[in-house]
Image (cartoon, rainbow, N blue to C red; front, side, top):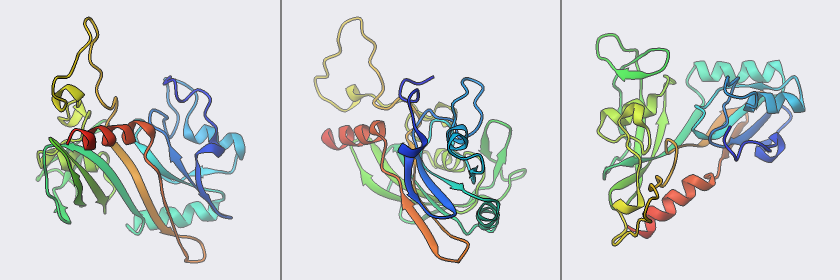
Length: 240
């Protein structure tokens, strides 16, 4: 279990709440659903508050950011229908290798998904569509925002990797760790100590979500960067 997960409280994660929905900011290393490694997950934390709460979608364990919970069955169905009809807007931020100037770039390569991974496959793949725009450029990396119109597994990670822009510390999709010694001149490595990456997980954050509630009103929220993501950006800006 990651040390930051031990004493976590569901109420501390809440970004916004209404009569029907709760929007939370999931920390990295906390599984959305049942995790065989330990019995603490986002859903179990929610159920400890109220057994009726249902998780509307999930994030990978290492990915941080916005997750929507429904407080009742009607709210859950309402969100599920919008998800199916591609009416839920989700925006992710990712730090990628290389300098890439994406401007509303349309990545529409079809993806073939196995139980653990997705890959671009023009013969066996299913339609997948991601809009990508660059937010900031650094010395050797870029901060991008991604809007996945479809919802294939690992869609953003697979699409970015296909365009030679893998996410930092995402080895399954060709993303190497990023080290301060690559950016900082005269980096002083302590003897006998192995240098740690600037972020110790895939650098992907679910930043924003927007959908309609049961009355048709727009519900939207943003999730602040967790500490590790914020520190990564601070270092990249400092040594730019």
